[in-house]
View 1 (tube, one colour):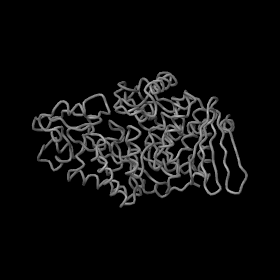
View 2 (cartoon, helix red, strand yellow):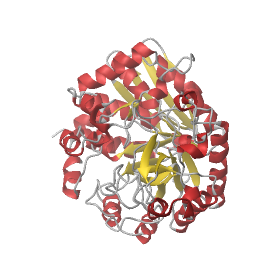
View 3 (cartoon, one colour):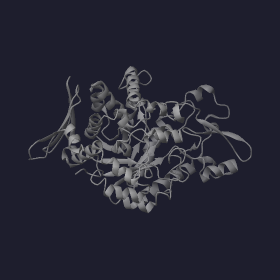
View 4 (cartoon, helix red, strand yellow):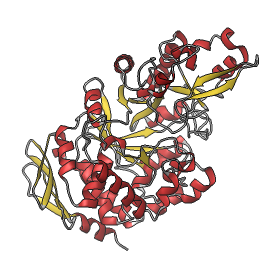
Length: 499
């Protein structure tokens, strides 16, 4: 069985309210019954009030509270008795509707929270040089400043990296540090094992720089991670960017995301070519969280070039990848990507991974098998677990691009999804993966013109995934120490579950 405290584990990542009927207790019931035996841990996406804000909980009014519609901190503590818990620590911003920011709007500089929030002038002065503003690294097409009116009639440009409802904070100010310390304390009191430092790359602003992943940003991440470690928590740094940056970050923190994996897996399956994927897995950090899909989109920038340095894929390869996703999804992903649908990120494709693979069950199961055989903690998104299709109706209602891959499920809809052959086969694959002690050991890989193999070995235990590149037929081969070798084709898993 996988070690829930080590790197050999599988986590579910989910919104509480979009899965299982809507409460933490409902989610716990689901994990103990319908999803029993699948997950060591669970990453609870923002459960702070309001969960139905402008950015689905990533714009908290009170980061130390649980939205009462979901339950309480006691419910999270109860869930932590059975599963390791990851929670988001939103270090870059908080809601414009928060009591602290509303106090600033009312009292201006007289508010005790005035130092907590960043204005453009605090970083650049009253008359910023246009070139300095143009140098800021942008995650979205609009300005990173929003003019907001104070009670005294003045209008000030507040720093809003993401949306106008997410006001950036000064993490080095005294109230900023107290704010972050209070979140850490609340987490550790209620059984949180891992914290995800959301948008950490944008947390430090400095005139004359890109204001993204500066040397001072690395220092901030290291200091915050050290505080968390003293309290018994590990930190996951969430950064989309050039792959070498991820390698550098990984040397300075507990965990990083492998955001390059999703486009590389898709490239491998689309082109029947594993060279780029093998190259990445040769150099990729081992202290990573692997994903294929997330509550955001399928990252493209993570495999791209940067300032003349080659990426993991070339620009033509990435262009072809994006167009193939749009084609496979019947064009629905195009409705939610780029400048469409009020999207806040130009560097990703908003699409369910199942639709990105044209709802092809064997190819989808193979993509998951590759993820499960990659080094790191394997994190599976709730929509990916249930082979969700793009929710175009939800997108039309909200006009939020990312909502196309943030569906809502009732418990009954979860049960129905769990009966789909591809989902049943994926669950069987996860359970097999968790039963193999080989994954506590050493990883290796090999590639020929026709076959790609991922292999694990540990004290007489072994496990391999063999992929025939042209046909994309795949076989699992494993052996428990002292026992006979066993093997199964991936397609046979699907055949077992067919009606």
